[in-house]
Structures are given as C-alpha cells and as structure tokens.
Length: 86
Image (cartoon, rainbow, N blue to C red):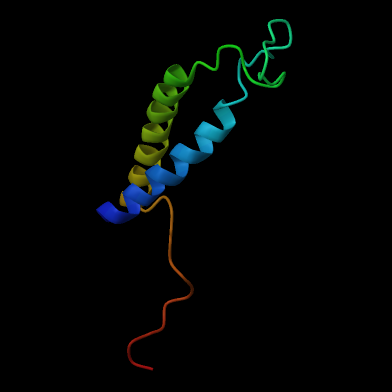
C-alpha cells in the first residue's frame, strides 16, 4: 500500500467512525428551550471527545488494513492476473 492509499483509507475510516459516534450520548434540549432553539439540538454534544476517539479508532483501522495489506492478508487485486506470454 502506498501513502495515498493509506491516507484515503484513513479519511474514509475517520468519517465512517465519526458518523457512528455522533449519536452516542446525545440528550435532547427539550427542557431548557429558549427562543429560537430547536428541541432536537443536543445539550452537550461532546464533539472534542468524539473527534479524538474517532481519530484514534481510525488510526487503528488504518494500521490494521496497512498491516494486512503489507503481509498479503488482504488482496486488492482487480481481477485474475493475465499471463505475460499470452
């Protein structure tokens, strides 16, 4: 795997993990509504904590995919190999 493929794997893993982490621990803001506030807006979204955990998990996923690719545990071939003599 080259650096571009690892970077793309990290970005895809990061966004997927972030979208899975966003609804964790969310409480509605229905009790303390002020003028102009939506009832569905989270009271404490804890975004910094979620971004940090997302980065750690995405790094672990990227390292696992890179390791598996390096030692041929994953095969990213696009199809059967065509012999050079034919």
